[in-house]
Length: 476
Image 1 (cartoon, rainbow, N blue to C red):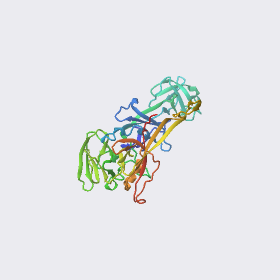
Image 2 (cartoon, rainbow, N blue to C red; image 1 turned 120 degrees about the horizontal axis):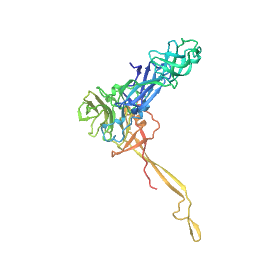
Image 3 (cartoon, rainbow, N blue to C red; image 1 turned 90 degrees about the vertical axis):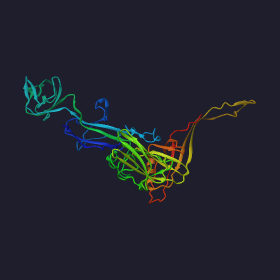
Image 4 (cartoon, rainbow, N blue to C red; image 1 turned 180 degrees about the horizontal axis):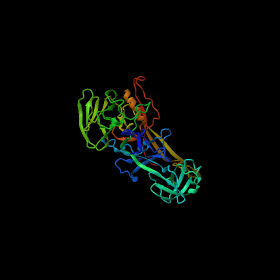
């Protein structure tokens, strides 16, 4: 029977950027040199040393004696986003997903207690240990007596095992030096070797994805894993567009501008399940696009919200799996006249891709930097007098750089899109898409924001300055 008890563990599917904490208890936690051992393996891999992803040896927590380990930093290094295929539409994105096992173990210094009366064995001290003992002749051992060697100082400390049986050992201490033979004690190897158990208990097939979950800006809530596993009706995609605390509905629908809207909903999917995507108008539940069928592999899949069918009014996307899962997300069509078709695509907090349209005026600017040095001017002699040449150059420019930036402006927006906008500003991965559909990596220059509220400001619009990630080369 395992000596390890699991006190707490994360849900089946967890965001890698949230705490992923395991808490365990063990009956040997009071042994000397005790450590809890957490060993991480990739799921389905053999649990052998060559396949260890990471191993943590943890001291018991003061007060409870529990072993606690947060593996979120490790998991963050094992998942990432996929930017190579964000414009190619629906597809597998297992770069954002990782399955792992955890072996729960422990170690402690071999410290064997004895309670029997000490005996004489050919003039040396014989110690009896029940039911058995591990030492053999020639071992170096350290003996600790309950009275710290006060009565029998010769027996306290480092000694050599002369002979041993299944439950006795004789050490190189003369029996005649003993004063009291009834004092109990303990024995350990002189090299402090340990009992090590790596797989006392096992947790298998845990999952993480490239996301971070929060129930709000004021507090970090626990992640409701069951909603995101993609096995129920309703199920939730791994996106900040919706969550179980604030379900998707027509009242908090994201804006989808015709021609330029781009959303990729990342969902937990399973092998052997067929997923059907249908588009319905919100007002009357009339199907206007679909069905689109996808057969996936186990892991994560991006479902693209496709507006190329040009919906004429607000709509919702319904993704139905043959395993009983139903994902449902609402969008409101923005068919206002526009000045520009500029769009920013961004990685949202939960790992899906969203877009924001900037339909008003766009201002393009460039920042130029030059590196120069002042060189010697040879000049020339004319009519016996030294003069500058007509092409003389004192200040020589040897390196010119230009960095382009764009100031983008949104149209008027509602409260839900205003809330989404701050996520764009804080996203680590942003791409600029121009009117031709060409995308470019960029960085958002904003270092702060104000999340406008309609109760304070009836008309809300925002602007953002971006800088293209790649510099334009200039010849020298």
